[in-house]
Image (cartoon, rainbow, N blue to C red):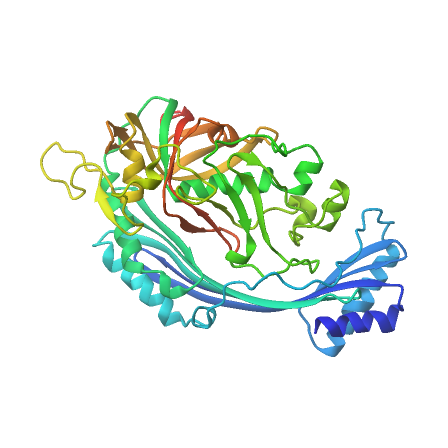
Length: 482
């Protein structure tokens, strides 16, 4: 289909027109539940053909979901008409040359074509494991297949699939959270997630209010994912960097030596090429604390005098070419030494191990304050904290200053006081105002977990991958009372 449109452009506009075409099939299947019942099951599948055309120094883009011969011809004709009316485009970077793909994206047919019953089974397991608490959330599966062709001879295709589950359990107005993404639906265990959410909810009842201030924190992967998203959207993209709106300074030691950030689109649920046909590859953004690379599409790469990293997207005009699901390397990986040397700790358990870092989460006696059950990875980080906070999640985060990436937002779904290496009292939510790069600056990272968890993106099928992380300080500027 993509090649057919390129040929139509050649026949209708002649050989001097440059054309690139994306033909995609996307499908999202979503099973949502609230009040512990499934209330919506929807599937949306769409075929889309997008044409970008450059003619006589002018560029226009058109798209259609009508993929018949007449529909494709109409797409070409109206895009040609639009190009003739557009102003000259001095930023046109030319077409991507022929190049082979660097690899394939994750694909699991059972996930791509999962039935509503298979998603419902995981919802039932989540609800049952919550032990009578009110639950809400979703289980989703996605698939994406696509092909690209241009008049310079580049022609590639690929496919990918993913699954995600996100749910809360609620008691006395307190929510506990469990969230996970995976390339295979079979990797999502609704019972494990339901128990985790319920445990957090029960441990979060009767929270106390603490004064605002700077606290040492342990961020769980659900909170670290927000840090990665904001670093990606406002810092490591070529548009922000070229316009001097980014904090990034190439070659500078801007982060703690334990921090290594990689954008590996082939390891997440994205096609193995971008919308300009450039093959995707692993991009090392930060290596042992040193900022190494910015992501580019062809236009931003031309401005910077470098090559595209394969990050062109339909939203690049606004957001620019941004990373697609970064990964914070865990402690013990070759590029990320752990500042507390826990990578060699023989007692460190795997990501599915659990251990209470506070009192019995079911409550073991009058006057005792329950603490949440956390995995052994998080418990190891908590054990080194004299006084600080365990943070489950951030939400409603907004950037106040893109140059320093100062972000304001709220905690959500669980905050607990850490004292002498143990998690105990639940704490009411805070507002924070914090520079994300400053929070990860040299000397500010006190520990990284040894195991990562995939956290689903809110708007796309990609995920953000991170371990828990212990930070020297986080700036909380307001509490529940203001």
